Amino acid sequence: MAGVNTSRQGHGNWGDRFYDAFRYWDKINNPPPPPPAAQQLTNAAIQIAYGNTQGAAYALPVPPMAVPAPAAPPALPPVTRPALIPLLAPDTPHNERKYLKRCRAPRGLGTTANWTPIRILGSRGGGGVALWEWTGPAETAPAQTKIAVKNASIPRQDLTEEGRIMTIVGASLSEHIARLIVPPEQLTPALCTARGVPHIWDNITRQLIIEYCPQGTLDDLLDMRKARNIRFEEMTLWHIFECLVDGCSVLEYGMELMYDPLNKVAVEPPTYVAATNLTTVVHRDLKPTNIFTGSRSTSHVNVPAFKIGDFGGAQEWHKIFANTPNLWPSTRYSANHQLIRRRGTRGYYTPESFHPAWNYNDYRVSPICGKFGSHTNVWQIGAIMLACFNLGPPEPHLPFTPGHFIHGAAPLGRLYGTQLRNQPGLSNLLKDTIHECLYEIPANRASLLTLKTRIRTQLNVMTLDPAFRPEGNQDIECPEPITETAC
Image (cartoon, rainbow, N blue to C red; front, side, top):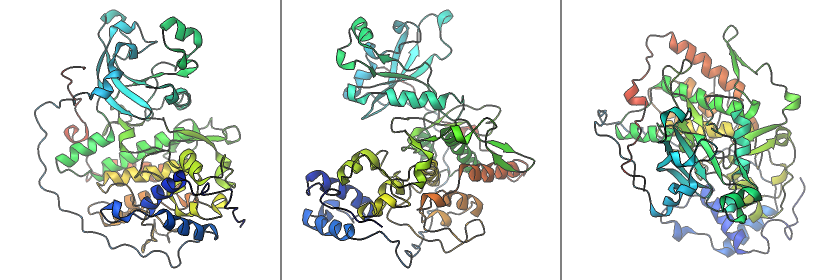
């Protein structure tokens, strides 16, 4: 494999940006014991470590890392009853109150004066999301009287790309995608002038109006169940799994996969044409806080529909990219760190971002580094399912080769999730299906078609088996918090 000209690629003359980027990923791949500050690599140590790897191609450890000894699962205390007092939404921090101001009111959905800010739903670098409720005349009320309004706080947090991707995936009308209520509006110079908005917002999308999910997120449901000492039943886990696969199928195919019950196999939608669908949407930030709890329907009788939301980090990637050398816009380690690798949330990064092979001179032709695609979404599905076991996300520093078969066959290579197989009371079929999402090499991971086939076939079996019963509403739905005041 071709070597690397280290004067042009990698360290950028050993600048601070390079050192910071190297330390960031080193702490993920080699987490230090506490206190972390005492273990921080010096600049000199980084130069030596990076210099050594830049002179070599990456090779998987031989023999593979030994399987870590599983910890005994903790015994849960007795289940507690649901609290009878209403949940109160937290007070709005001062720095987030700007998202509740009248200038942030939703546009394109009736008179802005008829909308009242209720509370903050979330905020981070890309802006803030607030709940707004219709308080105008009932006869002129829109179909959705509660909406989630995302506002950018500064122009560089432009929501144009997020709005474009949400429009693409929302066209499927899938109940597993959090959808836009009105089309995104890009502020033209004329609109800025008419509304008295500073012209630094010219040609910027400042606001997105999104469907509101009153039950919150999968993370909220996990917190509620942890507080009451309840683990998910297996049938519930399969249902959540299927929702995630259905949502990611929209990102890959533009619509959900279908299931042929006669042949017990998932099939591509009949209108899908691979030759004309050359890109896939890679979310990059799938995690429990970005999975929203929807409502029940005829297709979701036992559990609510779970929806993929927050497309602020999503990107379209050419499907052929996963099988070709990586042609990055930059050859600097620090630039690749910022532009390519660090999109998402720590704990839910995929091997495509965190893998130590990025430090070697053959990273461009690596089967792992930067190979973003549908299999990236699949890995994060597996990470979310691990979180549903109360195990937290996979440990990036502990890839291992299982000492057992996966679906009756030898494992395809190293994978993540050391504690999964040790969880009691759940089938190996479920555990194996999660584990085949978490292979180190993206090409080894299960496809969405394979996952849909396994999950729907098993759910059909469980539905007819009286031994499996759905959980009660009180254990699978979170009540909407009550807001005392908006500000």
